[in-house]
Length: 153
Image (tube, rainbow, N blue to C red; front, side):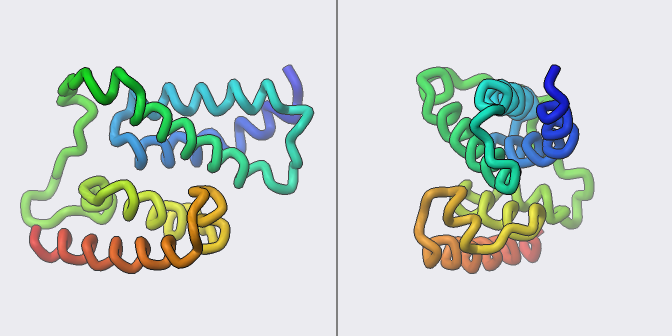
């Protein structure tokens, strides 16, 4: 196997998985998406610009998540898997991560990319293929909603 692929895999496997999990909320879906992203990386290894590998990986991950969520299976078939649901461990207060899962995707993903992955707003706009002002607005609204969730519980 190519040494560059192994290096990319070791560097970004956890980031890709966490972003996928944040997006989908299910471990099994996050594992599938992570696998699909690395298949795409392997197939495009010769085309990658190694200065922007992480950004490319995050963009592909977001696109794979969107594809999964808009697929026929996810729209028409509903399976409740209690093992993969987000559970509240403390009955008096939600942790930030648990509250984050309760946010709408349009708020959750920018918050995750900004605070957990350390991306700048301009980079997030590029990854999500949206306007910089939209990212700023969603970050601001998401923080307010997150604060309300934390105060309510």
